[in-house]
Image: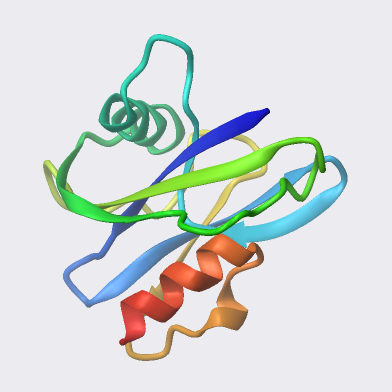
Length: 134
């Protein structure tokens, strides 16, 4: 079974990228903001919806950044293969959010200059960090 995830890479005016800390199934992790594709939804619709629901902001997609190109089982269900799609985003209005609308989600802004793979939890996000800092 496939689990399709869609994430946004939002960089603010200080050249910091948005990360979020969340909990699921008793685990705390840091990742890029985004979430699961819902039935009947396109990938851009998904990332726009996720940012509206979780942070109350309207975003636009500047460009596609990365799609998973290796096998990655889910950290929460080994019977699911994760496919993640990442888009570079821009906010429709400033300022960028500093707090989430969803309980137990915390926003963290990290300087792109200081970003490293240890700042995120999951293997696909680590791959995206490598691409961002190249």
